[in-house]
Image 1 (cartoon, one colour):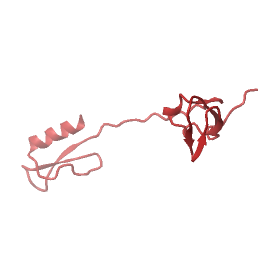
Image 2 (cartoon, rainbow, N blue to C red; image 1 turned 45 degrees about the horizontal axis):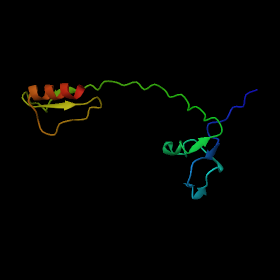
Image 3 (tube, rainbow, N blue to C red; image 1 turned 90 degrees about the vertical axis):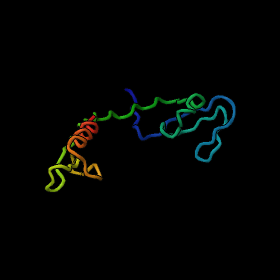
Length: 112
């Protein structure tokens, strides 16, 4: 039967090499064994602090879907010459009024 270690349990580490290692206000001397969560020991110290137990695998992460932002060009008020660019949340992007060509170019540039 194989032992399964929960990811929130600390594992045992052994300090190798010379010098001390201050961990949570304690001085860890060379050759000393201590317990800590894998995320508490910085990766920079993993060459001198060796895990004695198996480091549990991180939980699988969900894939993130990226949605392309949609930018729309709408006339400012009742004007036929001045326009604004709005994002998908209907938030105005520009501060000053733009001409149709400039507003369409801005929307195209923001969309990528």
